[in-house]
Image (cartoon, helix red, strand yellow):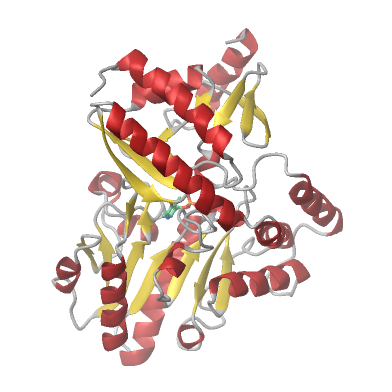
Length: 404
Ligand SMILES: *Cc1c(COP(=O)(O)O)cnc(C)c1O
């Protein structure tokens, strides 16, 4: 590492609050599926800013759309209309089949909005304020107090208690565990269609259908968090679209703006007409012209390039190659995931492998201590998968080695 890069890292540790154990690298620019650090070293990127930069770096059409919006207007208040937000809302309705959109600045805020929507919907029905939400163990929904309250990881919550009240936890794909938590106060059942942070666990079709039927029967809102698994990552625009059902409320963020901070929560017309009204919710930045110009262009490019088709094809190939590693190495126990949201489970912590991969010019990330998560740009090709597997194999051989 150059002394210049080391100097910046030292300065970062003096100035930034230490809420991350950062890898020892300063990224400077990107090109396609590659990142470059300050010293000009190239890295193959299988993280894409954690499922954000779906279109690859330095995408000219995307950059140009942002530049021209910057020269027009970056921000106006939500007290006025703006064309990019109207365009983006129409497009996101079209790709999701949902009816009403509220733009936020982040994923956590989208989850907050979804929670408020559910509480208001239930409140309008019976005037009470004791409604309950069922969330899942091992879930991740963000770091704000509301989103943290529905995050099924006690370690993230402990120091910040008390959380918001009336949250109950069940297990994903265990419908009986959900039934055990349902009461006449339940107003929503919330989960990720594919759990990301918690270890790459896709919801089963049976679970999805049973929850949907339960929610219909009892007028409970089914809320799906698609912040990580949505926007084409599993081969359909939203992961729930594979299951032949529709949620009542959904959240999106991460790849929605491909790097410009933006999220959204969406709902059906029925929920929209019976929940939040003027004065109930708001945001200064959410849905501003710059963020929405990004959303609008991202959706256009997804269509033009048929990104979901690429995900299906390359995702299947990635799956096959990862299964090869499970067969080859005793320390690799399982592959899980859908499309370009994949996890490789090891019988030990994966930190050393990830650090070694960085040295060899490959960016990977974990999900929990024992799982390597693969969330590359959605425009990667088979040859990039081959390159990644080649480096990862070297790392496994170098660190723990043993073949089956
Ligand atoms: C990343 C993530 C969030 C939180 O999004 P932020 O933009 O970091 O607030 C919420 N839910 C899921 C499933 C996520 O992956």
